[in-house]
Image (cartoon, rainbow, N blue to C red; front, side, top):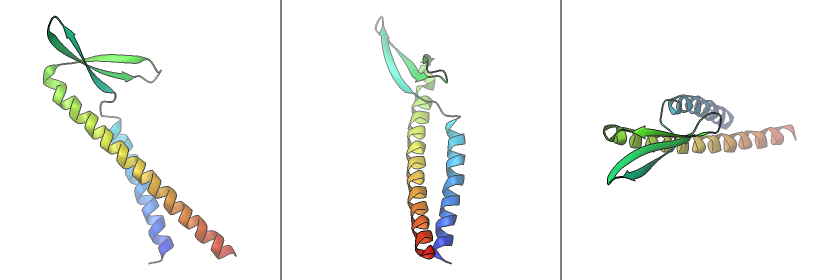
Length: 105
């Protein structure tokens, strides 16, 4: 198998994975958790920006706090993977571009 084919397959695979991960991100919580103390009790809020750019504070029940934390950590990891795959695509496309130039000369 030629290097060109391997790079093209890698680009295609990464693009499919990025699309899959972006779909997963749409179901995960986004933002950050903030704590407010009122009368000695702690209350947890998820703060994020909605689609119009307005800040939203959503109350989190203590029972749901671990779930939301897990979702935020998962989101962070998936965003890291997406970034790495996008960088790999750029590198592969650059290598393919360099190959095209050499073949034309």
